[in-house]
Length: 163
Image (cartoon, rainbow, N blue to C red; front, side):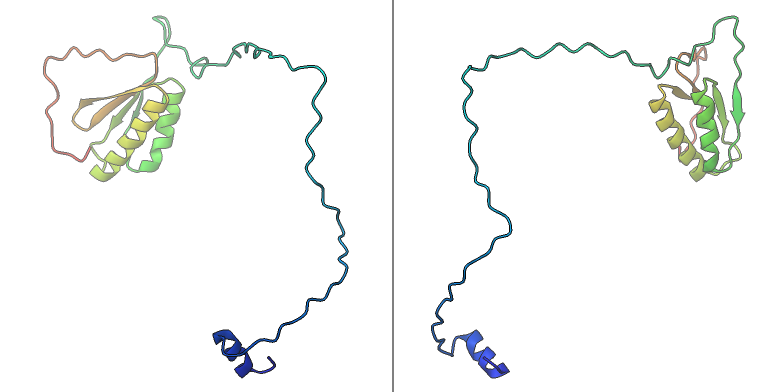
């Protein structure tokens, strides 16, 4: 099979191959093959040992550094009128540090307001906070440990807005 035609004939099986005699050459292996040998059985039978009891490891609570305000404590409420969704990081930082946040979306585009509300709802869930609508386009986000009491008999009128 020196040329292309011979290779094509060989491929399609049109050429009769001559039997080649195998050449026996001693192989030199660089690495000896290891065979699996089972471990000998110990003279003493194994005994069953019950698993050790694990003691609970004390962990620091996520809310350990946050304390709910007492009657003597001064509560600072932060007010935001965000115009861009990038301001949500500072809103979440205030919630994380234990300060309630009021969000006023009167001057904010509906799309941006909906985006900020979604971000704050996710953060409220992660931080065990609460988010509530207190008026049209005004929301309050309170951290864990602060409750909102609703004394209003009527609910805020609903407007058809994207959030």
